[in-house]
Image (cartoon, rainbow, N blue to C red):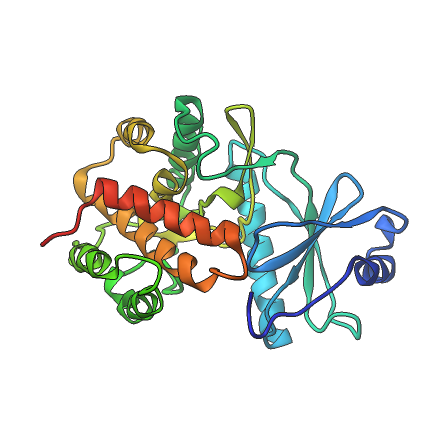
Amino acid sequence: MHSDQIGIKAAHVSELIADQFPQFQGEEIIELDTAGTVNAVFRIGTKHAARFPLRMMDPAECTRMLDEQAKASAEFNELCPFPSPKPVGIGRQSGVFPLPWLVQTWIEGKVATPMGLCNSSVFALDLVRLITTLRAADLEGRTFDGRGRGGNLTDHDGWMEVCFSKSEHLLDVEHLRRMWGSFRELPSPTREAMSHKDLIPGNLLVHGEHLVGVLDTGDFAPADPSLDLVAGWHLLDRDTRTILREALQIDDLEWRRGAAWAFQQAMGLAWYYESTNPVMAELGRSTISRLIEDCPAQV
């Protein structure tokens, strides 16, 4: 998926586990076939998992990042009304793998899909419970750190231009440019809230119609409160999005900013993963279709 991607196999993970986490020695190691774009994930027995960064970076910076993510995940786990992974420890870089890596607890459930529960009011209300709980968390004096989504929409103009130019063969880019032109002019939020920051299908686990787990919680931090609303366009059809919106009591501006963040994310998926990750590419296309349905371009 990435030009700087690192590979690792289950045999190597077994060696690392035996050396650095001897309490798990002898546990079966299974490489998971996921649509994840940031980490390779290996299950350790029945109760734990290891996450290995997919892209090469400075090892010291990776250690700092994993430390921050472990702290954020632990905080998220304490607050979240649904199960989420607890960090267990950070593995050291070695001759087997060139970066630090993370061991965490395993959460049971089936990965959500864009269409699987798109018309389920039960699932929508579980998302409401999740978002409401996260928004109520104490900021403790923290503010948005300026990284990624969750700040000023206009900070993403350069990236959006890349996405539009790369998507000419895939999407109605002229129409989508007009949509972004409308989104980017939305007023900035007047407050911040604690946010998961990436409520896409692959980070949510379900059983039946219920949400039963939340993954990838290491970026839990302050952001635009609208950011977690992206779940509405990634996972729900129009009528069910209305249930989500009404239950959260979202005004027009906040709802449109949520749509803008979903748009910003989806535009990067369809073209970047076109030939390497069909699940993520299709998520981009389905989310864009829902956004066009809700937010026709300004002419």
